Length: 163
Image 1 (tube, one colour):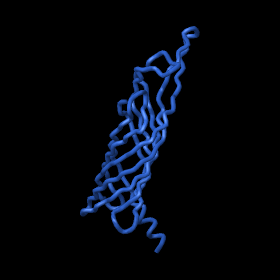
Image 2 (tube, one colour):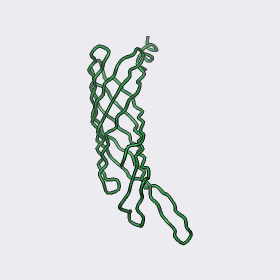
Image 3 (cartoon, one colour):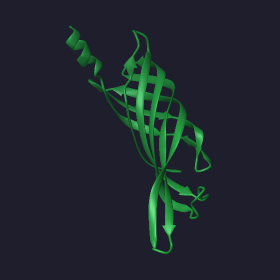
Image 4 (tube, one colour):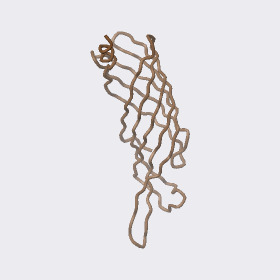
């Protein structure tokens, strides 16, 4: 699989006064996909297709703040599914039908990141290693997503309501 596009939606939920946090997130990734070995019941190989992942993860992390920077690491597990394309050709009617195969997947995901505080938000860069517990297209699923983005500090909003 070749990387094409990804997005992540998550939250860092502080656990107490230390640096521990809970990190639930949803990862959506799109990969270029070639299937040189047709699945049972399919006779054509597929080239230049597109695979899409929908993965949920729950991680435990630790953050160390140094000035305006925060360095963090996390380790989590989760799962979801990966849709991979299939093509079925009806030669007598000259019709090709594209379908998706749903591959259920458990994952283990360690990762690390750096944040820079810009006031009410943090600019961050993060990377992780997604290790799939199952195969996709007779190959192991492993991915190293890089994420760059902004994390708004919602804790200030919630803390103001309590006062």
